[in-house]
Length: 195
Image (tube, helix red, strand yellow):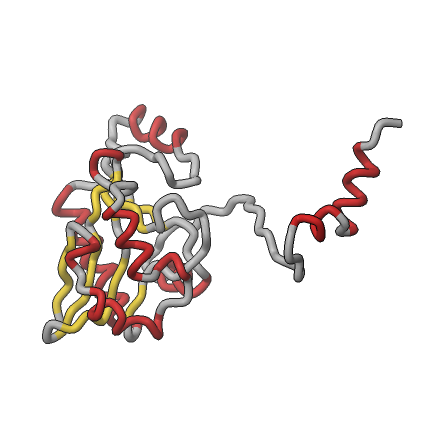
């Protein structure tokens, strides 16, 4: 069993990645979506996203994956951490580059470590921590992890950031006419109507 770094998502064969399909819930962790982000150059080192995906392979078969980027800015993350970067700079430390496990430009909770078994996920985390030490990188952020990912990360003393987010849930509305006639919309219009 070995953990490797892939400097492009395209280095991972699609058929190999699909071995993990039973572990993937989010459409944003699907092969075609992640590959399109890099192929289109939406995610590239030129705009601050250097791919460093960690994969776990055994006998040439992919059995674990964690999206990872080396970031030189905080653009496209939907998390505002400028105060953190300023504080580290004032303390004489480096905030950038930082490591980031996230789905670029996608503020949706999802699994961020996929793999067949906890041992594989643990191995990926340990290898990323070793990489941080080797490269003298001071911080690693995992954005919008789902509950299962959060539990794993808590075992490694990650600090959980709490914030406010708004989640839209479709209540069987097929188009915007249903939204305008919803009780909440009617209440909002009454509350803001001129008196």
